[in-house]
Image (cartoon, rainbow, N blue to C red; front, side):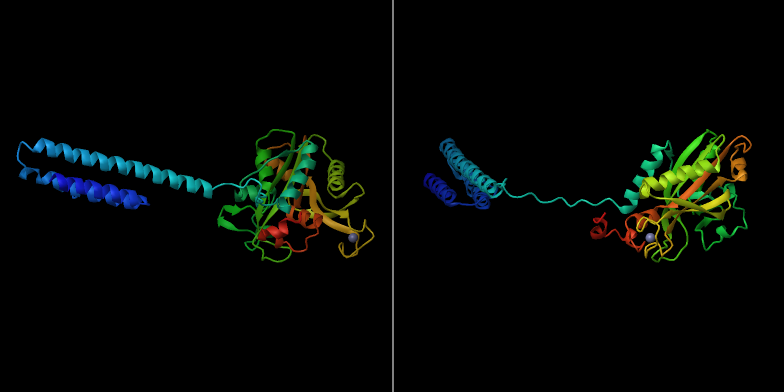
Length: 339
Ligand SMILES: [Zn+2]
């Protein structure tokens, strides 16, 4: 039995020495020290050993076990250390390599235009206010002097969610909500997404953006409207820009007008960009209709105001000379990077 133990021990140590992988060492551990391992089976045959020999044999088994375990541990530690060193060597970072460029997005022309418009009006003391895109009928229409039979309410223009809830077709409901709060005077800008059931083409989209402005105070006249919007046009398109107003009709303003600016390409001489006229249509505006003031609880004998609305996409298309509105919605980074 003593020879047998010695043989097992020497064989195990030899195998450990010859091992070059952790898996092999594990196999050796199982083969010699495991539940069905060789040393364990020696222990199991102790019952055949005479009682006086048992302590001696037991001691020898323990010695063999300790020798094998010790050798195994040392071999495993050495192998793991070697593996770690190799890994570190592989993962060395060459700090002299050029850095990879981080691909981030690009500010959208709509956003650039919106920030520009907001900057101009905030500079004139306006507050930017946002409101819900899903809106009650009476905010989107009724309280803006657009009664039930008005053509603008036709289902072909407006997305209805239910009889009295719509996807807002303009940002004017934000102004109604602000007027209702009754805090006067008001100088506000309401930018946001609006929805109309239009077919998609180069100049139309079922979803686009409006920026509407509203001023309500004592003694506001059409002269204030003209002065403000002329200043806006000069800030946006350059100091040489002139404006002209053409009479128009909107249900929520009276009188109403559309404003043109001199073509910033040809300075008003006429070119392909302005279709030879020298003028470019830019926004709608007017004095707030007394009905609209009254419906929001504002005394139209004491207060008056003006409002205007401009399409954000229209500003972006004009300012960056983009000829197809659809490009603004495709989010092609190669397109966006040009601005
Ligand atoms: Zn022109």
